[in-house]
Amino acid sequence: MSRTRVAILISGSGSNMVTLAKDMASPDHPGEVALVAANKDAPGLAKAEAMGLKTTLIPHKGRPKAEFEAALDEALRYAGAEVICLAGFMRVLSPEFVARWEGRILNIHPSLLPLFKGLDTHARALDSGMAVHGCTVHGVTAALDDGPIYGQAVVPVHPGDTPDTLAERLLPREHELYPAVLRRFLAGNTAPLPLL
Ligand code: GRF
Image 1: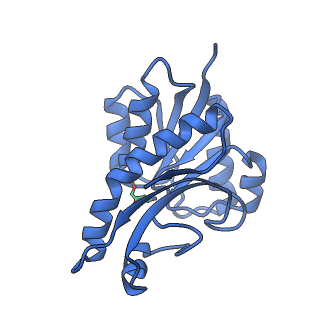
Image 2: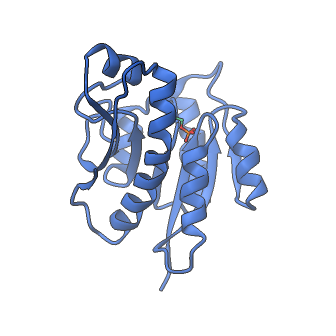
């Protein structure tokens, strides 16, 4: 049985990319890594290369968004990508790009959506006095952080937490959630997965 070809887009450390790629190294996984692409010289690119994965750097800086996205789209299609996983990818994709891939783009967002869309989610969760925080894997649509929820993982907020301590507690839960959701998604199961 052929495996679904998955592209992973990163902008930074790529820790979620590493966990997704490691999981797809299992022969029982329905997907395989087609490409790891970054919009800048992200530390995650070296990690992907060390894992023997195909990588590409497509700079976004200093070029029109449409040109950047056309180059990205070409690289994805050349690699035979069928599904895209955004993993610490910090560029907002245009509605036109999303429309070409809609239904086949996943993202991990570090909050319990629909709470705290956008940036600085850990600080905002702390400021709101939440007793719990978490992360969400969702389908990407034209609206930012707004698509169907495919899974969520929860962490407690501890007294004295800072955004950094909260992010540090959450990241391992992201690494549990995203691979589990991707396996289900590729098997056609889009029911939201709760990791409590
Ligand atoms: C993570 O908090 C993730 O939720 C967000 O970017 C952060 C870094 O992710 N999207 P990674 O280590 O680059 O995967």
